[in-house]
Length: 219
Image (cartoon, rainbow, N blue to C red; front, side):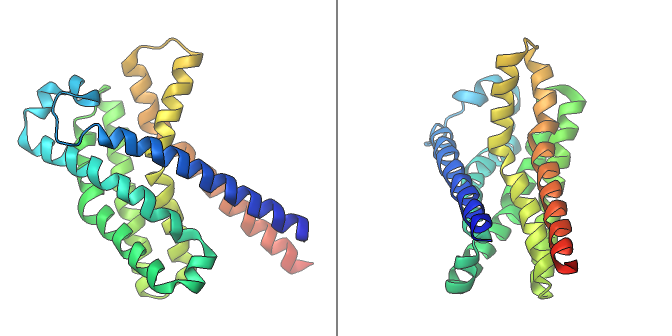
């Protein structure tokens, strides 16, 4: 039991180190767009879209809010914070939910509509934005109903999608180093793989832990 707890703590520490490092890299990416600049980084290949006011608003709304969502989600899954810092947990949780529902997911939906890579990539990013909204909405509903087990599961699912900001970039980097594919093919792959891998991994882990808990209960 002690070894199991030490292993679990080690995994958590590695996870937070991972989040901290890649969160820092995401901050650097975000800083490229401060102050507002229409001719930098990703926007250099979106000059047709950036001429549209609603795209401008959606893009900068998404970029500026998603970085906060990434960091606000980190303390939500710490049992120590939930127990000892309940007010902080609730405040950061409300901000996390509110930003996704009102700003990040709706703006992501607009960006998905204009995604490069044709209909396949567009559908991938549109489904991501819709599921992001849906999962966090259900997490909010279950919290209001005080069904905290369901609330936690949907918060985890929403954060798995939040982390697609990191995973799709890692996936793209991996693909570039392994295969020589046209840029639009890579975009189509990461449009789905960047979040599906996260979600499927989480579902497997939750299933595994549930089965393990059931076995322990029977014994």
